[in-house]
Length: 182
Length: 141
Image 1 (cartoon, helix red, strand yellow):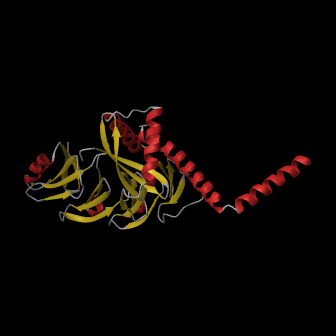
Image 2 (cartoon, each protein chain N blue to C red; image 1 turned 180 degrees about the horizontal axis):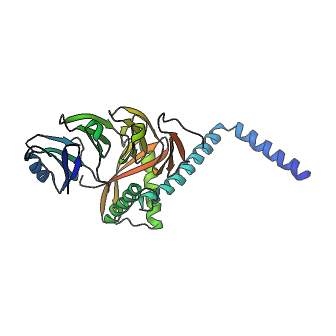
Image 3 (cartoon, rainbow over the protein chains, first blue to last red; image 1 turned 90 degrees about the vertical axis):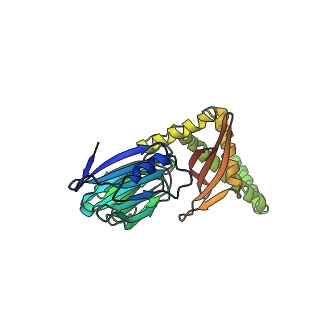
């Protein structure tokens, strides 16, 4: 199945080993970018095959090495800036599809869980196992907060409420990251 | 009235005794911290044994840790919880197993967890003396 992103189609694939993933990336005539190569013991291998919709059969491949911990990588499309975000393990990487290069990389202090985009404020919240990081669409970090395993997040207007496994809940202003008294 | 006076005298005596024995105060503080730490570790074992609740990722990760523990023969029993509590307490005191100190000052420790049917590599994340989370990997990685 394909996902449409601006003038591109994206197909996500999963491979059982590194060799299969590399074989797939070899077919990408527009080049390939491999993420997560520095991980010591990757056991998951994913490829996002990006295909321009308007000019023949051409492919840009994004390969991801990941360590599973039961989790899978996530992708978030940012059509305004032609950025495709990937979140996996302890990192978030933004790929500029038009320029076919890494636009930014954010190192996280704990395992990536999911994206929580807030388009009206042009903020993307990156929820992790222990922390939450706010970035803008250019990949600039605005704030980060964390103190224990995050069990729940809920948005409420300009604030985000965080529940933790062994700590009291916290309420943060989405824009400033400051603690808000509830 | 008489009992109040006796209790005050006892309290005064205890206070005087403690002030003249600072080592004992230190010992009591250490024991109190140890007790608090062990209580927190015991709570965190629910996460390790697949009993987390909340967002899907937390539940998936918790169940994956349980799967790995069971793959080496560590099932959720009172005996195994006690084994892990002691194991984690030993990890806390061992200062030779630190592999990383993060920018937020969390400390990551590396160890080998032995079960009846195999071993897992266990990384634990600590903030001061509080256990925050675990990473389990198959022993061959």
